[in-house]
Amino acid sequence: MRIVRDLPALRAELAKLGPLALVPTMGALHEGHLSLLGIARRQAPAVAASIFVNPLQFGPQEDLSRYPRDEAGDLAKLEAAGCDLAWLPSVEVMYPPEGATAIEVGGPSEGWEGDARPGHFRGVATVCAKLFHQTGAAVALFGEKDWQQLQVIRRMVRDLDMPLRIQGCPTVREADGLALSSRNRFLSAADRAQAPALHAALRHVAAELAAGVPAGAAIATAKAGLAQEGFAVDYLALVEAETLREVSTLPGRLIAAARLGSVRLLDNIAAA
Ligand code: AMP
Image 1 (cartoon, rainbow, N blue to C red):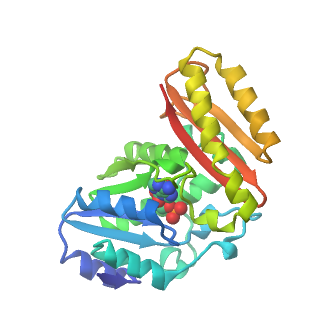
Image 2: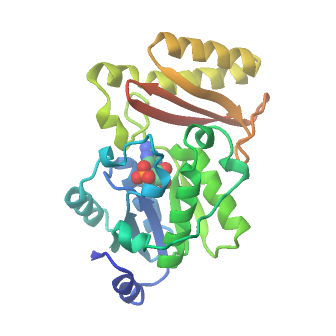
């Protein structure tokens, strides 16, 4: 695996590789990221992963410095996963001084994470656009775990005629249902034991909707249950899968964000 940290080195390595599948990450890699790598290998002759903790997608109240980092461990995992190229730009390489351009996606960026984290999707869209241009990837893979993000990227690629395909990949979960996340390591033992209740609540709501219970009632009951179990629920909603607009009838996507202590958990499932 080639490890590159600046644009000239990246271009030199890309010239030796065929069409590329790109897995953008912020590092602290877990089995969820590695499943994207595995799917990527079936999409293109060469696979690249980027590791870049993107300051642009963190709000002023969010602790960028607390984001977990483990470059040596990540590189070993990428190597073992058969990755051909690791792209590790510094902040200075990604955002040279005097940069004055950002990408603002409307539509699916609005509401939910867009409300909870103002400017977040602007940062995500901008860095992903740069990664797509830097690597010239033919396909980029994103987890369904971050459902709204996946829709924002799809929208941007369509709206700006970017010449690559976006592939969504299923959420990888612990045996008890908790979606893998780099942030799970910050859960206390008690909160870790409680955390799978979020996924369980989504599944319960999906079953109720399928049985004909009105969305408003099913969701209100689930939110109250989660609050009783110690979650601070930011939102739990039934939305149209691509636009993220709230809907009251199936089919849709059930999306949720809830905090346990200082850890914010995101999850979503299909509801049909
Ligand atoms: P991150 O490093 O958190 O920015 O995530 C990098 C990519 O991995 C994103 O496309 C995420 O949606 C995806 N991802 C994160 N967690 C999971 C998971 N549990 N299952 C599948 N994909 C995931």
